[in-house]
Each structure stands twice: as structure tokens, then as C-alpha cells.
Image (cartoon, rainbow, N blue to C red; front, top):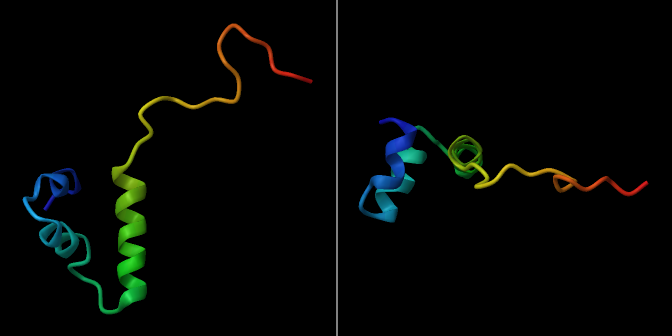
Length: 58
């Protein structure tokens, strides 16, 4: 299954099973979730330290 389709699965258990399908222990499950979340989640807005039109403080 494509990673983009996981949020469309109807139940939470199905989504968890799809993310952890090849995991043998809890450490591999944690790694699978870390990989999934780092690939699937994106910030809604670009982040920066300064606002446009304003200079940074020294």
C-alpha cells in the first residue's frame, strides 16, 4: 500500500497494522511510526525565523 493511502483506511487498527506490518518488536514499531510520520506529515505553512518585511533583531 502507498503511504498516501494510509490516512484513508477506515479504522485506526487498520492504519496501525499497515504502518507496522513488517515489525517484529516494539522498537521496530516505534521506528516504523517515526519513519511514517516524518514522511507523511508536513507543516501547513513554511516556517521561518523572521516575518517578511521585518528585519531580524541583532
